Length: 65
Image (cartoon, rainbow, N blue to C red; front, side, top):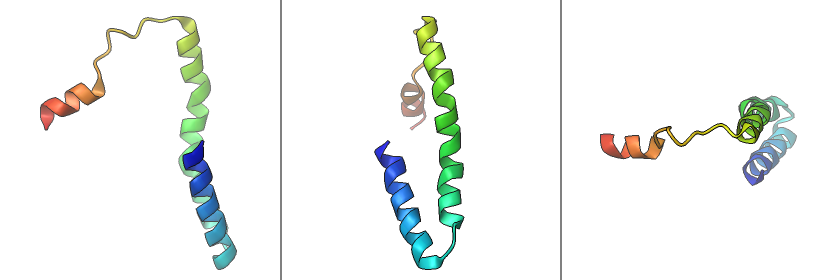
């Protein structure tokens, strides 16, 4: 998770300068939802459910543009 590591490193550095944990707390809050959803996504993929009937979001966005 390079993006998390970059954000965490930047927040850690800011925390050291500002003597505040607010930046670190913010990074954790932002990343909690994606990390929590990993198990759900894995379970869906492992279930063998067919998701081929879904519409590609990028296709819908390109139609609006």
